[in-house]
Amino acid sequence: MIITNEEGYPQALVDACQSDYELEPNEWRVTSLLKGPREAILERRHSHEITRDVSDMIWLLFGTSVHSLLERVPIGPLEFREERIKIPIGGYVLSGKFDSYDAGEKLLTDYKTCSVWQIINKRFDHWRQQLLIYAWMLEKIGFECNQARVMTLAKDHRRSLAKFEKGYPRKPGQAIPFTFSKKDFGDIEVWLIERFSEIARLEQLPDDQLPVCTPEERYNSGTKYAVMKKGKKRAVRLFDNAQAAQDHIAKGKGDFVEIRHGEDKKCMDYCVACEFCNYYKEKVEKHVQSA
Image (cartoon, rainbow, N blue to C red; front, side, top):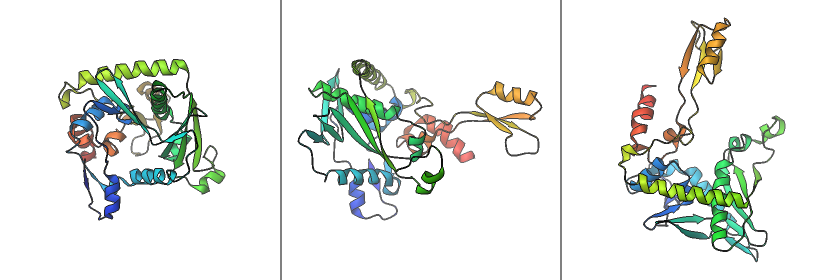
C-alpha cells in the first residue's frame, strides 16, 4: 500500500500507518478472510497500487495507540499478548494475531475501538466470528479457549446522552462476552475449509468476474419505499417493501411511491480496493457523481 501525507502530518504518524508484516505466499489473515471475497482478493491483488492518505487513517492510528498503551501493562504469569498463530488449511496458511490470551482462565480478549452505535445496535456477530476463529486456532496448537470478550472503546461516546437517553451506554468502554462450544468449533472449521476452497476457485477469475459483495458485506442501508404527497418533498412514511407502501396509499394517506435505493456505505467510505472494482465504478461512483 502506498501511504500519502497530503495534510503534512508528522513523519512518526506516517510510519505508524505502514505495516511491517509481509504475508507469505498463500497466507491469509483472519481479518481479510472475514471480508467479502471480492474485496479481499482485489485488496491482495492490487496491494502495491492502492493509495491511502494518513488523514483517512486517523481511527486506525487511534486503535494502534490504544494497543501500544496496553502493551505497557504487566503481563500475568499465564498470559500471552500480541502473539501470531499460523495454521495450515489445504494449500493455504491461516494467520491470526490476538490481543491477549489467559491460559489460566482459558479466556481470549480483544480490544476494539468502535462507534457507540455498534454497541447500541448490538452488532457483535462479526466480532464473535473473529474471536471464535482465534479460539479455534489456539485449540489447534494445544491451548483450551472456551470463552472470549471484546473490550470496547467507543470513540464517539457522549456523556450528556449517557445521562438521559434510554438504551445509551453509560460508559464509553464495556466488556462484550462470548462463549464457545464444541459445535461452534466444528462449525467454524467447516466454514474455514469452505472459505479457502471458495478463494482457491475465485483467485482464478479476473477482477470483473469476481462475485459482487453481498448487500450485507457492502453495508447497504436497504432500499426504502417512500409514500409521497404531491408538492411535498418530505415523505409521509417510509416502508421496507413496495406492497406496504401501496397499501398505505390505498388508505388515502399518500399520492405516489418514491423508491430510494440503499447506499453501499462500505464501497463509498471504507473499501480501499474500490478503485479496482467495476461494481463500484458502475453502480456507486456514478450514482455519487450524479447526486
